Length: 219
Image (cartoon, rainbow, N blue to C red; front, side):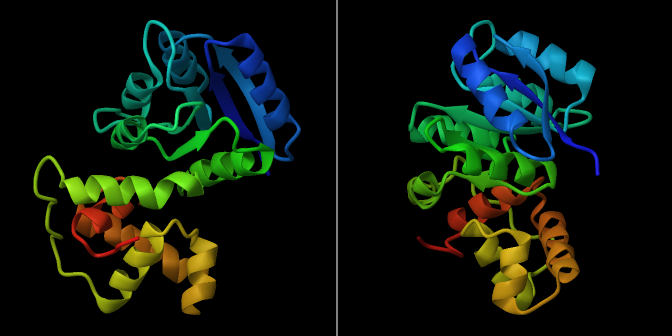
């Protein structure tokens, strides 16, 4: 099995070194490039085509949000998975990162295990947001109301899809959903794919945001 290839971007050299050491020590993960600013990170990612990019938010020339948008946003022709990591536990940063297309959001004190989990989740098409942030963030923005009314499904959700929707919104992985609902992993993946199609969203994070914005799920 090929290692998950990661590009790390942070304007502080000591932070980049620390992230590289943590990730390179994890089985099946390899850091293939580093960047000290957002523009360089985007260029490097487009050239190396890593499985996952790990971006700090505050970077010169192009911040982590804009770098994420360029690589993973709706206008990205061939999106790359991005996990945003920061020292700043600010809701507006988290929400902007997720809206830009990020598949994960962690604080720098998350620890090696959670960091590795987020990278692996992003590489497999799932999403991981720091547990301390998830419910508070989604509830806060859902309570404030979205900028525009959330789009209605192109086709009504089935009862099972509503169940899957709720578990995804609570941050469960496919394996956890399969165990919780006593269904196979392939069935979970099929339902998640169906949800993305019906809701017109690109990833699990957007499924979760939609669930909270439509009051399907409450923390």
